[in-house]
Length: 304
Image (cartoon, rainbow, N blue to C red; front, side):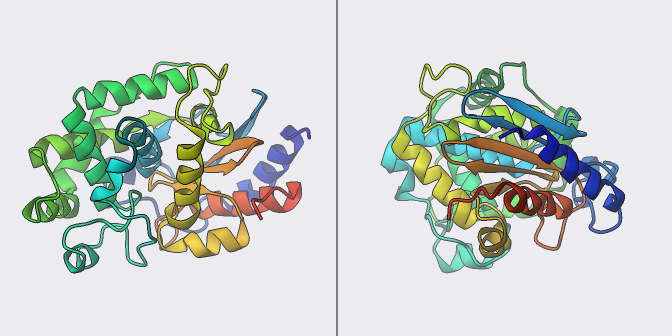
């Protein structure tokens, strides 16, 4: 299938809607200044073909999309031991909820809510060189140098009171091994990675290739078994409280971030990244979700 006309048509249909609805993530000062009226879309097929439209080359803060890649690193190095302190169930609560964490004695419901990603970060800190290893992975996957946006990381650290509370809460239950400040430094930096749609579609392409490297398949990024499990978690937990609606209307594993990006996977076919900064009430890109629904409808691609 020639995907370029599909992406061009989606961009043309959504561009008149830019800035009309939704709000940028104003609780992070560095993100509050991002103009809402932007939209980008890009994909990469299993055999390496790429297509893009709109603001696909505009870099943005990937935020919680980074949880895909820290989870991949942790699963690759720790295997099933990772799940001793992290669940694999949808949360049914806001992504930064303290209530559920207290009820479940400091064990996060899944690795894609904030508490779960902080727990993953703790495991990576224990393994050493976590910040450098994450950037090396991202740069290797997309074939370009990737960096942290230090302004965004600092902005998150200054205003991340709830994430600080989550980390200390887990520490009080003995579920965090390392110094909370070091763990949160990694977490705030991973959220502050700066990439564009084209780079993210390329970086995530191992998820549609059974774990094979996006460029040439070697070396393997992760195992086929781990890839299936990551995609399963994306489907059930990757879009916060909207996961059920996303599965119903789009039918693809997705992972969103409050920077306005969403990565979606069509196993054995392609990965797709959409970006528009204005968010809905659940913290997902408003036009990003519309774009994914249009894509699924017009191509007929779904895991169901």
